[in-house]
Image (cartoon, rainbow, N blue to C red; front, side, top):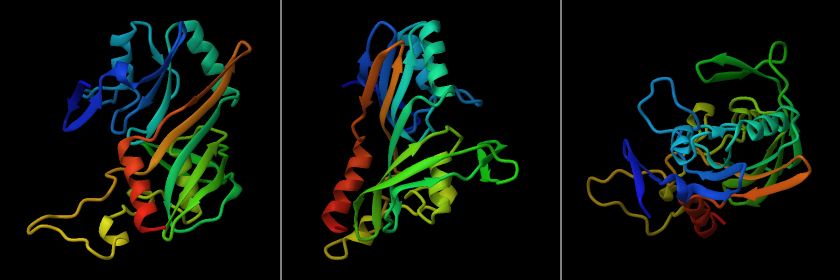
Amino acid sequence: MKTLDVRGNKFPQFADMVIHEDDNLIVINKPPFLASLDEREGGELSVLRLAKKYHADAQVCHRLDKETSGLLLIAKNPETYRLVSIEFERRRVTKVYHAVIGGTHVFEDLLVDLPILNLGNKNVTIDRANGKRAETYFRSLRYFKHYTLVECRPVTGRMHQIRIHLATQHAAIVGDTLYKGQPVYLSQIKKRGFTLGKGQEEQPIMRRFALHARELHFSIEGEEYHFEAAYPKDFATLLRQLEKFDD
């Protein structure tokens, strides 16, 4: 498979990201470190820029944080973009994310409904007085000794919503240093037999925060759509190491 190398990050060619395509929609499994839209400073590739080379009228219907991997919807024409946008605005799109969080947490459809205030420049905070409505449901999927795999279902779509809502529960996503999440090192969970070569510095198992857009479910004009995106290599590796050494 050919790859695109941008500032040391290797991305698959756009066609290799596509998991579904029809006359109106393209659905991709976005790799981490690829921006959804063009960034202000410019220069780097984005999903939007790649999609337009693939299909001239392509429009990205929503966005994921640059580090977040997973499902992203792209409309192939203005009418589909309008219809999908309406579904998102009316909160009729079911979004399911998976995250690995620090600590063992038992969430059984826990609802976090703390309002979020956007401060600008990609900074948000919880603000009960001035924030906008934000609701996320959390359910624990798999317990490890020191970590938990959780399902996150945001009802609204505020910036950093899942990340900051988890942080309010003292359950920050691993690697999410903005919200005091700590990276996972193999030496932390593999107590025996772990060695580093002379002069080597240990790197975290994942070099980003562990959040993946796993599922999307919605309907357009009576037609139902359901998509699921496989874990990328780094997320799958983290889970595999936790299963092996932190179970």
